Length: 74
Image (cartoon, rainbow, N blue to C red; front, side, top):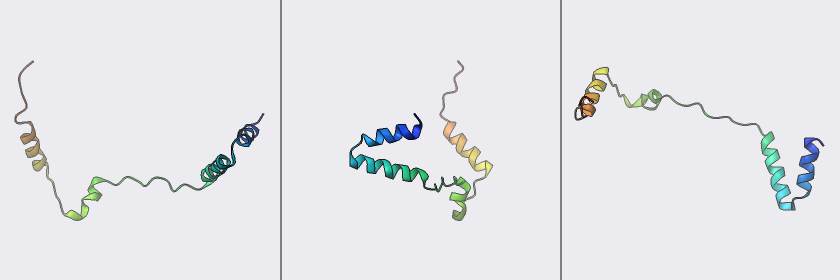
C-alpha cells in the first residue's frame, strides 16, 4: 500500500466536516510560505532615538550593579 492509498483510506472513514478540514489542511501545505521575518538588530531598534552609550557608561553601571555584591573568599 502506498502512502497515497493509506491517506485516502483514512480520509474515507472520516465524517464530511473532517474531510473538509483535511482538504483545507492539504491546500495550506501547498501554499507558498512567506517565511519568517529576519530579526532586527537592537542597534536598529534605537537608531532614531539618538542614544549613544560609551564603554565608560557601561563600566560605571557595572560598578553600581556589583558594588554591594558580597566579596568574601570561599
